[in-house]
Amino acid sequence: MTTIEKPVPVVNPWAKPFWDAANKEKLVFQHCKGCDKNIFYPRIACPECFSDDLEWIEASGKGRVYTYTVVESNAPSAFVGDMPYVIAIVKLEEGVQFLSNIVGCDPHSVVCEMPVEVVFERLNDAFTLPKFTPMQG
Amino acid sequence: MGKNAKRAAFIGIGEVPTGRFPETAAIYHAIESAKLAIRDAGIDKDEIDYVMPTASLYSPAFNTELVTCRIVEELGLKNVNKNCQVFAGGSSSSCALQLASSLIETGKAKTVLFVHADRLGTGVTAQGGIDLFSTAGISAEWEVPFGQHYSAIAALATNRYKFETGCTDEELSAVCVSNRKWARLNPNAFFNKKDITIEEVMASKMLSTPLRAKQSNMLFDGGGAFVLTSAERAPDLCPRPVYILGEGGTVTHFVYSQEPDVSRFGWAKAGKKAFEEAGLTPKDMDVAEIYDSYPIYQMIGLEELGFCERGEAGKLFVSGDTWPGGRLPCTTNGGMLSQGHTGAGGAVALLIEAVRQLMGKAGDRQVRDARFAVETATGGTYMDAQVTVLGTEIP
Image (cartoon, rainbow over all chains, first blue to last red; front, side, top):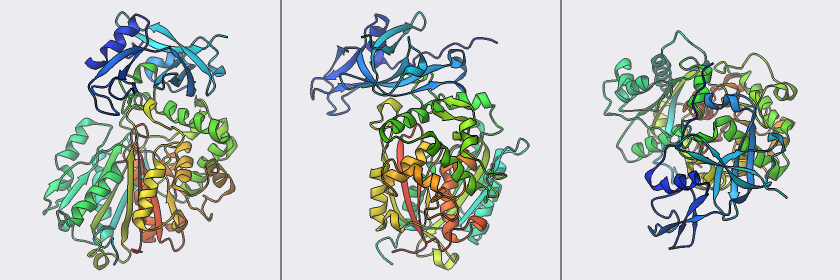
């Protein structure tokens, strides 16, 4: 069986700082100086107050599992070899939410509201994906 | 007639069986459904002045034919002013209905033909279907790289809902049992040969926890169509026209992780608007055709629309309240779980079924004296909530 390459993020120019930071193992999101709202995913203007005055800030990397699932069969072709793998929506301390994978633990140990922290997994030469792992201690 | 007098009404419906038809071209499903709908309306085909196909997902080439007036020519419709595709994924039926009725209300169209056809059962491979539904409507930047796909999306909603309400896997499986009982009475349903039990559902293959194979819709070929005209004109053409009484909708997300509440979505707001516009309540409904691509959505839909308290929907499916003969007939064609999922056609079939029940044409599964029905639709990764209230009279 031929290995199917993993899909890489199709990056919008205004989100490039996010992926550049991920390559340096930093998790960043946008912050609106107009209304103080934290923003993810990256936008061209604040989705709350429509201001252009956005800055990038580094996340604590800590959050909770809002919801999760363990993929055991019928995965997309490029992910068949990864099964079982965990897909989760993680809510960061700063209030923004990501879809990612929970790694570094028994997939079946993941539960809602579990505390997690960011880890970085290199996808290829160009991309590093932020993933999450159960918080230690 | 009351405030809704200018609204549109259904005068005809048509549908071909849902299934696997490797020898049948997709255009057949479109034009046969359309032919049945026009004959059901009892009008001359040349009264159709507006054709509104929705999109087919299996083939861009076939979809282009739908866009470029093939239906009009195949049926020989002589007085069509516009052939205009309306597509909103799984919400296409609701969005097209609102647009078509608006055209009729404003006099821009007199008689609208809506058509859906697709070949997701035989036009794509099984893995091709999985791969289509791991990219279509899923963010290529923020979710595809993490292995997201539609079973996982439903599972994410299910786990959060279970966490918040204590809903059990047995209750989720009971949705499949209920829908199968209805499908048994539906000649157009793919799964109409035998009942299914909670035990059989729970013994099926695990897809993405806690979602199992028999809790997943399956993709098939199929088609459906309906004809709309003005509420004033409808009674002269149709013995039992079905009026559009209320509509409500809300869009909540594109990227699934941005949905504010994956155990509720936007149904409460959309339902409130639809019922208020109709001047009716859930208690007035004789039939509830609730979108069911996976059990979780049918449960959340019933609860958020106000048919029961949060966390209580599962009991209705277990007890038989939602089954044939029950007090709350729900998703009476068998839904996407048992009639089968045909892409945008999943909710087209539900809308047609709501009209069929109200017209009194539902055969063995006819809900007696059905006067009012509610129908729901949602597209993409449950990006929106669309609710339609229909009736045989304008209250």
